[in-house]
Length: 273
Length: 273
Image 1 (cartoon, each protein chain N blue to C red):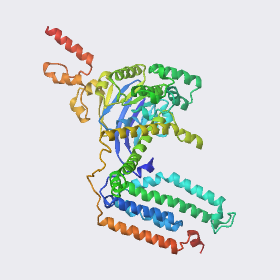
Image 2: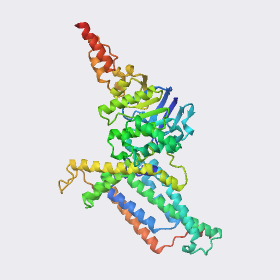
Image 3: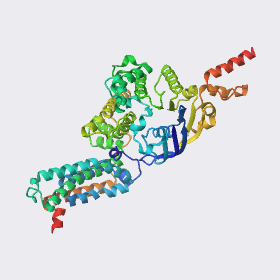
Image 4: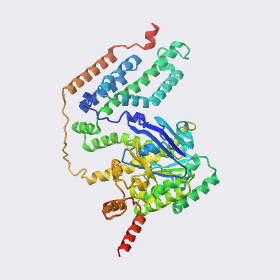
């Protein structure tokens, strides 16, 4: 569940927390696009370091590291599948003439697998910073001020808000079933998947129950009574927001330029020189 | 049976929930763990079946440290009934729900059948044998949850907030049932806020505040000390409050039991007339 911890908003006073969520989301989206554009290990490694200053400035390094640790299992899975597929289907690599037998060919496949894993890590790392430093309320406000219908904004922010709640509940359910002798990590892969049924059923049933209760409580408080909803707070762009926006645009332009006109060498190619 | 030695526990968030707890619970003892929200009551009892492992210190169950033993192994002797039955119910029928733990512990089919009958009878839910647990009322679901723990006849039974959400009649039945379990030499640990319930049962009480044990003793001593109770945000039982208010009339101030109070008042009235 530690991966969810890395997406749970922490109320801390910092420059990053005070940034406008729209600009922060734009910045994270730029990182997302860049991570998709580049496939080389070198460029993705550089990209990994981009959100780090934000992590330190926001004082959320511990939670951020926890989200990375939580994503470790999936990262290993991505690495393993990329390596296995690269080994058995090496035709996508220009440098390799099947079958894979030389050390250099192995290194090429390894580098690609590492790059794909790092791409996933970059995505987790950047979105984790965004969610750790943006309250669901601000997020909803940002969506509303971007002229998205309130119903959608509410559904989105509620979903985000309930992720950590569901994570806590999942933990309690796991504890309750473990207390009845359930060993989640026991047996082969199929058995382990089946072990989670006693956790998933109460989790889903409770989530449905909670959503019905939430709907009733909202209707009791005049949800949808007026088409024209007012807000207590309004988001306003500040200097730091304009700076981050400019930096994000420059990063995007630079990334597209590099993608179009610069050939980034692979680490294996550099080593073989 | 249960031995807690200098127990410290911190959650991954950094919150130090237990600070140097020392406690021994003997075989067949009835212990109530009381205190305000966040005092560390549930955190403490979750150490008794290994759901939580000490950050520092040691917890021994039957002389065995919980540190190196799985929850499933400890659960065989220590049954834990969670506060919310909806955190554990998942089966299609009440019968399957009770069989779940018995199957996990590897009981034979004939024993499972016998134990199901016994547990259904014990909790007076035989008529719901083939009913879905999700179709039952809150009180009935609580009884199913309790039956699913008692079915394997653990030596220690931990109940987390057993009286929450129960109507008066159910509460009284539950109280009698818990007393009956204790009379059968079961070690019973109850986590509760409910002073009236504790007053009726008159067990040994530990009062917790901010991760420490504030006071340890018989219920009639602790629940009649408003100063100590106030430190844990607890108020004395109603009957004690009345007797404390009327202390000037020479009434005793250490009464927690309604029947005892009635006797004292009747004697007074008889003497006067």
